[in-house]
Image 1 (cartoon, each protein chain N blue to C red):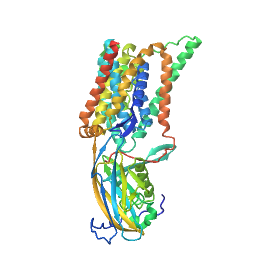
Image 2 (image 1 turned 135 degrees about the vertical axis):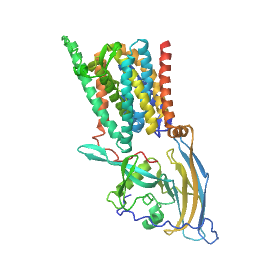
Image 3 (image 1 turned 60 degrees about the horizontal axis):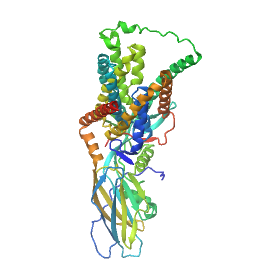
Image 4 (image 1 turned 180 degrees about the vertical axis):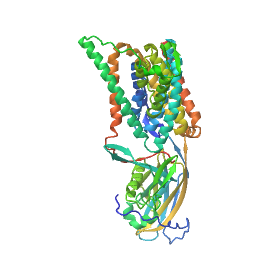
Length: 306
Length: 269
């Protein structure tokens, strides 16, 4: 049941990959996220080189986000204008990120960069999510009054130039913060192979204070554009996209995502967030662990010379 | 196998006797391959070819057969993990200017029983003696905008790097040494199998069949074989490397189509 992955140059058990795609798809449908952050560590664990794992799953994120955006478009829950500004930033971020990744890979430091990025970003986001959602659950159990949340945007958002109207998001703000957010997500998508939803969604909600109904749809739209550009760039510059691997993953992934989305209605939002936060944190720690554990072989081949 | 001394500079290649200078008195080996062109199906299996040959030994001394197969030379880059303030980091890449992409030996007995260290080193026979190019002086070269350190064979850690190349390649089944790989099927008639993994490089391979008597090489037969890769996986690999941008675009379109198709299928249900 093994299949040879031509770019990764390893053989893997393909039913296992379909199952993996379906599981990650289910999780992503359940939580409304791309699931890229979960996929790369498992692929690396299966023995696929980190640079190939990161580049190949970007196209898996494209597929799952596409079916997501279609669903949200039908509900008119995508702010195309906001998404467009963020996607423009995402494209620039992707260019910069892929070049950076290429340089790191040739330097033999790609694995390190991937591990460090996972540890840093997933660790931070996971901790925040867990802290915030556990607090909410505790308050509900104790029956405390929910404290009134600060509803104001940070003041600096008003001081910046290039103001634009975003009617669907209910915003009249400078285009620079969403653009910058896009650039950041673009760099992450190149280095971590993730869509960046786990950073975009909280930032759009709590910093930009967009209308909550359009946040997920808009971030998915920006994620499609960014990860599509990242995939093409990774293929063009690094030749690390494995079409066989990504196809197998997305076959399972799109099916899993649909079932995950159906299940998500059964749980409370803060419980889902607590579980997601825990998963994010654990993945971050697991990926970061390799930096501190003595490797089984100190030497490794570096790519670059054929 | 550990060795205390750094390997001496590669000596002049041992002169190979003409392929067929046959007299009935002379001790001689002749060999052939089942296929001079090998198609490695780049699925996970790789390919296996059989080398067979005959030993003419009119003397009473027993003779040993050693088969050496070398793949095309190519530079190798390595990194080493080092511990820096509690964190394992990769070193700057270190470059060997050339190492065989494939190397195997098969013999009738362990190589160390067949000939002595110096003889094996001179002929480049055995994993401990295979030639890996390293200059006298260490220097840096810039490739793809990255500065690599070229390994010098006079430096202290040269042997560690060299062993790492061999160990990693052995792990990938690219380097192999089988002390019982040459099997006599009949008096004077032997066979050896050459296992090429799917990751074996393409190109010209050279096979040497040595005949040793009392620790001395008495005859050699030289063969060449060409390794090519075939199969759908190879086509994908070629496509991804020859037209990377088209390939990337195709990947994205495929992903978008799958996402769109899934949402269509599931909406209907």
